[in-house]
Amino acid sequence: MHTQNDSPAYNILMYSHDTYGLGHIRRTMAIANHLRDSNTNVLILTGSPIVGRFQFPQQVDFVRIPGMIKKTNDDYQSLSIRIDEEKALSIRTNIILATAKTFQPHLFIVDKEPLGLKREVLPTLEWLKKESPSTTTVLGLRDVLDDATVIQTDWREKNVYSCLSQLYDEIWVYGNREIYDPIEMYKIPEEIHSKVKFTGYIPRKTLSKSTKANVRKGYRILDDDKLVLITTGGGGDGMEVIDHYLNMHDYYPTSLPFKSIIITGPFMPKDVRQKFRKRAKKFGIETLPFHPRMEELMAAADLVISMGGYNTICEILTQQTPALIIPRENPRKEQLIRARRLKGQGLLDFIPWTEVTPQLLREKIFTLFRDQHQYTKTISSFKLSGLDIMRARLTHFKERDSHYREGN
Image (cartoon, rainbow, N blue to C red; front, side, top):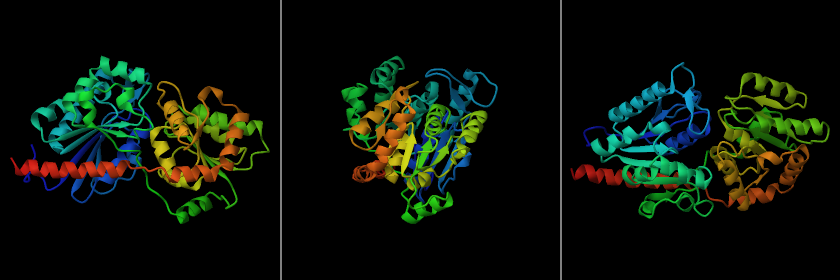
């Protein structure tokens, strides 16, 4: 229980399991950066192996828990140290609980997994509910998790619906209900409906025209040049997208009048990155393994080609850059579902994973260039309300917590 004598600051603890990729930690950091202020601390629990590469602002810090890598939807193993899954999860579980007990959060936000990776957050949720009932617990869900029947089955088997009812105060959906409604799709029980708050998509940092111009100048992109940015997030499962793009150049070696930058991702195997770099160099394409300010490259580009993970989509929409999505369909279908729904809104275009050819890829790129202004106009009218809604909820929690302390 919190009292005014405990700490003058409001403490937010965020959990992001981060098995293998960039999306979770980038989303978590975007939220943390917006919720922090001079009187609000944000502490992030993360298993991301590259969290140290990001710049953390004042009032935000992280606790690194041992990394895990997903082999299948239900099979994980230790990322860096040679230790069996059970021991690695025990270490993670104990660190999460000990951090919560010591940090004493006023607000605990769990990203995506209601129980955490392999139920590792459950002991902390149960402890908070029993020993710190004034702590507000929130589950943050991206717009789409997976095929609806898959999520329903998974949540029933793991007893997630009961957890949502008993251990969470609110459920934040980082998307628009009219685009995708998890209440309906995941059969969330009626008694929980009032807990669900649709925040809208989460915007990223917007950039000035001068910043865009400087980025293009730095990569020797002229005003009349068309720039295509290819990014596959962490890169662990994006090799085929880059391979398709380079195959297109092989097929049309002299008739592609645009420039390209490829970000392979830090988790792509080094030998694969090197092969792509060698192939790309023949066409004057620059390749980088990682870029800490992807929003700058997206803003400078005339077109972004990606797999369409949630984080990348939010960055694309923020920078109002037309996008061509090649969504993976395994092990989850969330990218495909999202691409279909957003194409229906006129916000992007996509090619199914199994239908990519050099001819179709070239055709889609030229069509998007031709319709660039229409896409930009449609995107500019699409409101990204995620951070504003979350800040409003935080203000509500702070006022309620203050009243709670005064009344006890």
